[in-house]
Length: 241
Image 1 (cartoon, rainbow, N blue to C red):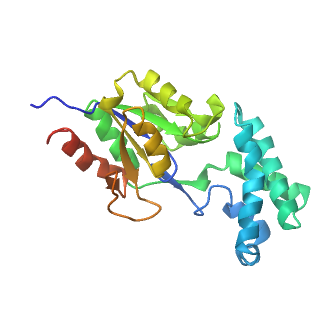
Image 2: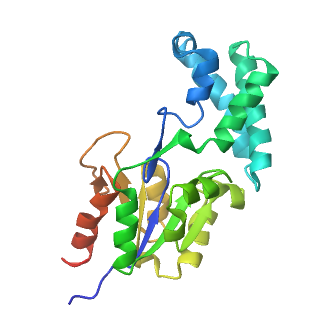
């Protein structure tokens, strides 16, 4: 049997192993229950994008968030800012309810059909599995509830480091925890910016095209579902898994 070239798999979470139930990570079903999609999208697109960027900036600038309670408070500020910028007319109670739902309602996330079986098969084949993801403390109980957390050998979550991709600390932390040479690992992410940064460390990239549906990319092999990784691994490993 050929010796495997790849022995470790890093996954992003969003649009790689799971997706938002309402197709947006912050504009949840609860948000639209209070606002209404028709009303929200009647607002000029440029104004909406600017308001979202403004509300999101403090979450980027001060990204070290260690507890669910702190996460909830930070998203109260996020939705309060968005409400003020777009004159949405939300009450404090409504803002609190939307933020609470964002933090504690794990049905806001939908695991892809092949995710669990893919992790199980990778583990059975002896691969080490890691996560590199920009996310929040609620990810841990959400992934536990989804039955995925126990399959990860290591995790690098941005909120616990205080930086986000493509900051080098994300990849350095992940490689240190994985305990394998970078060239023996692959990273699956839906953003080429993140894959480019990983490639600088010698990590092989795979593009998750779940949000776009594309089937080819000039720099990276593409997979539509998590189980697409097996064809890529077979190619990288010279015909063996």
